[in-house]
Amino acid sequence: MSKYSVMKGPEAFLPPAAACEGVVLPDPGQGLIHGEIVHEDLVMEAAARQFLTAKVPTLFPGPLVLWNWNENAAKKAVAIKALYDVLKAHNPGALHIPMPDYRPKYPKINPAIEINPNHPNLTIWHNKIDVCMFVGVHCHMANLSLKIIRGGTDCYTIAMCAQAGHEDAMLTFRDASPDKINRLTETVRRVKASGDF
Amino acid sequence: MDSKSLIGTYNKKGQKIVDPDYLFFEAPRERHFMTGSEVVREAIKRANVDVSIAYPITPQSEAAAMVGDLYVEGYVGEYFRGENEFAVMSECAGASFGGARVFTTTSGPGTLRAYENFPMWVGSRLPIMLNMMVRGVNSPLSIQPDTLEIGLIIDTGMLIWHAESAQEFFDFLLKGFLVAEEPDVHLPIAVCIDGFFVSHTKDDVLIPSADFVIPPYNPYRNPMPAMDMESPPVRMMRDPFVMKSNYISYATQASWQQETRAACERSRKHTIRLLGGLIEEDNSDAEILIVSSGTAVAQGREAKRLLAEEGIKVGIVKIKTIRPFPYEEVRQATKNAKIIFVPEFNVAGWMAREIKSTIPDNHRVIAGPHVAGGMTMPPEVIVTEIKKVLAKKKETVHG
Image (cartoon, rainbow over all chains, first blue to last red; front, side, top):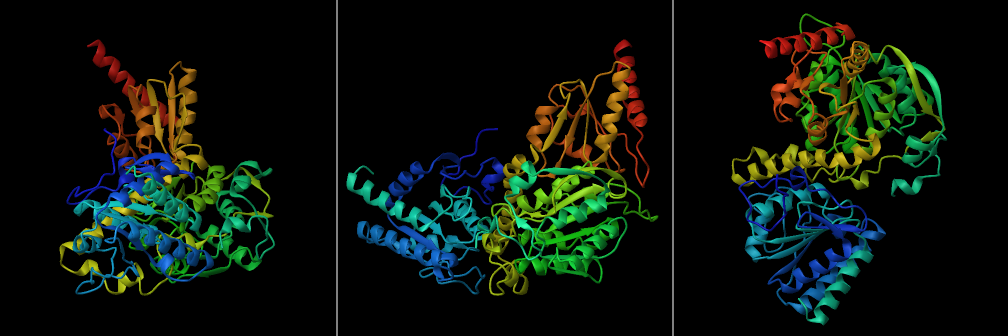
């Protein structure tokens, strides 16, 4: 069986879960690029390049960082806003769209102002988002969304996960912390300054 | 609070919270002679369980009653008897939704009565520990050992481990909590033993001091929000988008199911580390193999010894996890085998089906011998089956 790569879609009517295709989550200090385990620094570089070359780089913060439910969440929120400010300064088309909750909403969400895990493709299509990063989304809901996005859109997905990472994203970090998000922001600044992206 | 930060502190009962690796691999252990039911008591005593609910059904009643004793002694946070098994499993779901570490036990018809809850637990990502002491489920009624019950839960999406001995049972119960509660797994786990053969017979078990416990469950690492009535899965059950007839609802439901299967796959990494692998091999380069799980392996081991006395070399492959199934491990372990016997304590032969669907050249698999309904499987029965098949092969070769 050839090794499965987690690439941007649209992949299939119903794309497989990457874990069922043999993709294994990284250990601490590592991340995934297209399903391959690599050193986390490489994921930082790759994410920075994706953000800097995107037409509509977008952050999707979820409930774990939208609500001030502990000190760490508040620090992460500040770090995410700082990352967004850097992206926006580089590209005025950058977006910051929350996933405030996970309820299926009828008749439908307003895709200009929010993303929903049950039909995240609507927000991607509506805003023509080509690179996005999930952060602060509960792992089950993030994986649900990442698979649907890979199945039906050509958006490049990045996950900044506070737990073990997401193999259904094209790039994943694990053990997200305010420091790690700040490191990503610094990497974006550094790669931008180098002009090599 | 991260439950790892509690290591070195004490729980309400005064037990010291220790690193699980210390408890599993380093802490001194003492030898005890006890039944499988008593093993449940000793494992749960060291497991920092918040809630335990059960309903009596043979052969698990004694174990459930002993957990009740632990509640009285202060080792378990809450304990009660449900109205029936369906109620028990629903109540376990409620406790788990609320962020509790939950333990329950069941057997035979009780498992089937509760069945609807198991895929619901999975879809809701509830890491409930279910001990199944398996027995007959058919009419005419049998309370005796029979593993058909495991085959019936195989595709619910739960993790399913099958312990061969009282020692394995003790270790699987404690380690099972850890694997099931990993945030990338976070699924219910069924730790199965063969009723009576393990639950009611006494065996040597090495156990660490009851002064130690594993860290408590941390619901804030849950891959879903715990008990949020405005969010799925709770909200989904009240206002089920899956009931809507549109493509998005179907795609979400499908993706949801895929994610729970993915979670089961992710458990491999954690399980291999804690159990030392998903299978155990003994002489597996032999041309004749016995492959099975539970006490059928113990009987196979004895058959192997009897055959060795006659100069017939046989290997053993023990399967510890039914879900996730050790596909690659079984393919590798059986690659040199010419004949693979799969003894089972059920008439259906679900383990043989699993193996046939896993390996190349599956004509090598002999589904049997089988016994059921409480029958024992003397090693001589396995020996006879192996010799019968070998004699037939010889006949074919020589004309």
